[in-house]
Amino acid sequence: MHVHLAFAGREPDPTLNTVKAIPNAIDRVILLYSISEDRAYEKTTEALKKKLGEMGYACESKVIKPFDFLNIVDTIYDVYEKYSEDDRKAKFSVDITNGTNLMSAAACNTAFFMNSEVYYMMDRRKFEDKPLGDLLVTIPSPKIPDVKHLGELSLNMLRFIAEEQDLRHEVCNADVARQFDMKPQAVMYHINRLLDAGVIELVDAYTPKGKIDKRRKAIRIKREGRFVLRWT
Image (cartoon, rainbow, N blue to C red; front, side, top):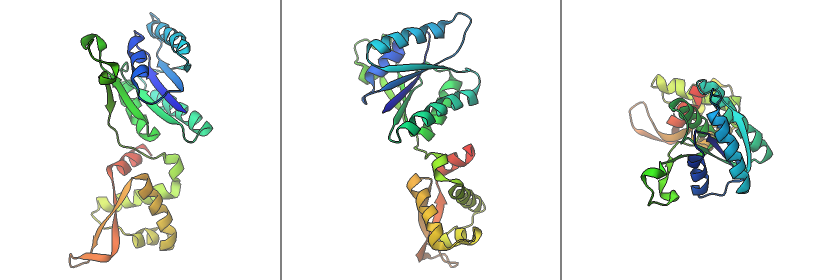
């Protein structure tokens, strides 16, 4: 299943153009809209639901608070949790074409944890001679694991590695085992989970004399790991 989320703007065309241009088949579209005095976004959402339904897409809508960062994050993440529980292989994408800066920032941040693609559709009125596919911009983003699936113990180990690294201390498997009073073999299970998640990496370890120690590897947190810790 491919679930696509999009902010509804004042006109339906940008959202429709993105849906048409995305290379992977979409199964369901979730429209996010805010309430305004002139009901412009509600009207666009109603028009989009009708048009997308005619095009064969399952479609639903959710209200967001445009100036509440956490509300936007929670709304998007609720969609992710709902459909990833139904289908663990579900894929997600987010269209930020119509979002304000704050809405786009919230969507991009949440997209990291959803491992989803982020899209922006350029204004077709300025490039009428170009096909939609050429106007669709994919926003590059690091792929962040689902924190809930990592587990609390693995996250605590990640925090320890980050704290030691900040103190310029070299951290190896034995150091983590000592800190958590576990056998090195048991610790390796969690280290491998963090490696698979892409939040740490193994680098050369050094002896007290500054030579490479071929018997062990040091653990270093990556920027993706820092991102996870900021969110947790």
